[in-house]
Image (cartoon, rainbow, N blue to C red; front, top):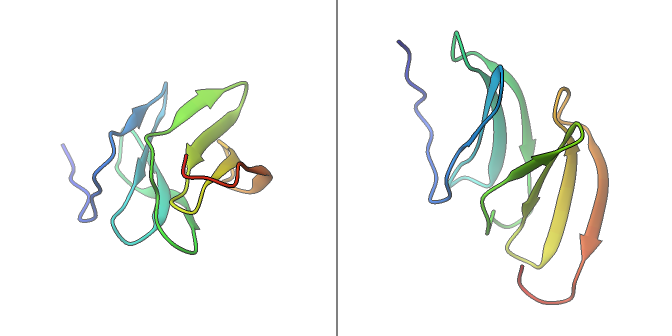
Length: 88
C-alpha cells in the first residue's frame, strides 16, 4: 500500500499498470500502480478542467483555458492539442 501527497478535484484514470491524476497545482501525473512511484509529470499553464480518458496509447484531458491536451501515455510527451476557443 502506498499514498501520493498531491491531489486534485477531477477523478483519477486507472489503467492496467498506471494511475493518472490531475493535481491542484496544474500538473498531470502518471504513477506506477504497484509502487506509487512517479513515472512522468506534465505541467499546464493554468489548470486542469476535466478528468482524463485513455485511447490507443494516449491520455487526453481538458485544461482550463479550453484546450484538449493529448499525451503519450507511456512517456508523458505531448503529441497534440486542440483549442476549442471555449472552456472544455
